[in-house]
Amino acid sequence: MSGATFLFWVFALGAGGSAIAVVLSQNVVRMALWLILSLGSAAGLFFLLGADFVGATQLLIYVGGTLVLLIFGVMLTASGPFLSLKTNPGEVVLSGVIGCLLLGLILSSTGAVAWDTLPSAKHQDPAGFTPADEGSTLRPLGMSFLGLRPDKDLAGRGNAQVRGGRLSTGYLLPFEIVSVHLLVVLVGAAYLARAKRRKDEVAGE
Amino acid sequence: MTGLLAADTIAEFLAGYVGEASGYGLTALIHAVIIIQFFAVAPLFYIWLERKVAGRIQDRLGPTRVGGKFGWLQTLADGIKLIQKEDLCPGAADGMLFRLSPYLVFVASFGAFLVLPWSDGWVAQNLDVGVFFMLAVMSLEVIGVVFAGYSSGSKWSLFGGMREAAQVVSYEIPMAMCALVPVIVAGTLNMVDVSRMQSGWFTNWFLFHNPFCFVAFWVYFTVATASVKRAPFDLAEAESELVAGFHTEYSGIRWSYFFMAEYASMFAVSGIATALFLGGWYTGIAPIDEGILVSLREVGGSPSPGVTSVGNYLANLVGMVVFITKGCLLVFLQIWVRWTLPRLRIDQVMQTCLKYLLPISCVLFVGVSVWPLLLNSCLGRTTVLPGEALGNKVPRARVHAVAPRTSAVFERDSNMIVADRAGGGRP
Image (cartoon, rainbow over all chains, first blue to last red):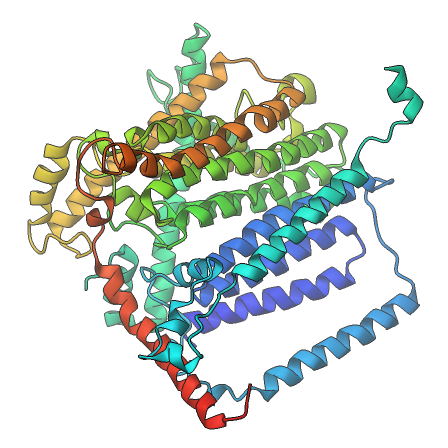
């Protein structure tokens, strides 16, 4: 077993095992801890695939950002010293069924892909390890966010004709839609969380 | 092309003896052990330095007895004492989280050292997104601190943890924006490349590249001091208000992990500042960097920095000493500030960040983007001082390394297009 395969199993078991522990744990803050381990292991898998940017983003946004907010929320809303969650059996059954359906969906779609025949499979380093001095995902990703897809548009000569003279647009539009969506969420959160004063108090000031 | 990394050369060297898989593992082990050495020894020195500097500033002597005249074994003696102390866990605490959180802080702080460029080619992982990775990993430290505060079952700890969370989450934003200012100048997030672009006289350092970078360095330094919870921003500990803040209930070796992580993080943020603003491993004196050290590299082999030879090794060693010296000077500055300035209140800390540092860093960010355009329209070039283009200082090996992979992508896509054509009616 190569080093990369070993690390893959470590991270994969870490991600899967911690995810199960999130579900089985009763204490909310411990759940957060297991979630950190699970998301951190997923980041490790990204690093292993040479997707440094995605891995670091996963760490920064999910582990460093979202989970800190989650812990904040738990701390600010907990009534007792160590808050624990009790789920009733109906919820367990319902979420179990939905979870199993999702798992089945993912497994069937991964099984439907003929991995051997994918053209990219033979170009990838089988160990999943890229030389560390090679740019991995950053440049193509950054250009895609700016709306440029040189990997598509420059593929072969006269390819623009194949696509009817149109260039690929990249991810600029989805990126902007997501940012506007986040802006709406922020404004909404600020509106909901604003200090509620009655009108007479404001008038009295 | 030659490998640009110690990693590549060590891995190739070992793979010749023990096979590829074991070589991979051994290389990782060697890197980790070397970094752990620095990670453990640097705090020993910094804690001693802190006590001496604090003593001098307060007109005392500081430690004088353990290990001779200067008390330089004081920290080691303290360390031995800490290992012997009982590892306490309060009855009201959440045992698992309480025991685990020092390690979380430790790991997060250690991870940042993976991409720190010690010298030309001496970096554990030469990531293309080095700066981003470092900021991302260092932001994880707060989770350990919050867990420590929460799980201790003590009001002081909880207050410390909450303050830390509020402070670090706010200060992350200006810190990242200030780190982006030199990144915009360099056009890369790779810490080795950013350092390489600052070779030559010290006027080439990004600190002096343009006025926005100059201001960004000081803002970054302020914000970095806050993000490693050092005075005047040490609200998470605040010994005059909160006993000891988030680590009130800790004792023994777990307590010392928090301190190792804190002092190592001080060096890590100083290391980012050194690589981004202060010329990394370059001395800043062109005759030394481009004369003596380059000729030293030619001793016993090729002058390329990646090749393992005696001359390269010595030149890299000099570079590493320069890098660590610069980092230590910044750490000294942090210690100096700590014992000079009074602690802010928590609302003042937040106000400093959100009302002053954040807008300032936004202005710097926009300013540094507009600066080259402004200069280009006034002077006809994009830098104040005439000189070599920054990109020319970075070796071109990277482009050659990428080429086969990129062509593979092209080939794949053209295959797909051919398939699309063959498929005919498919959308």
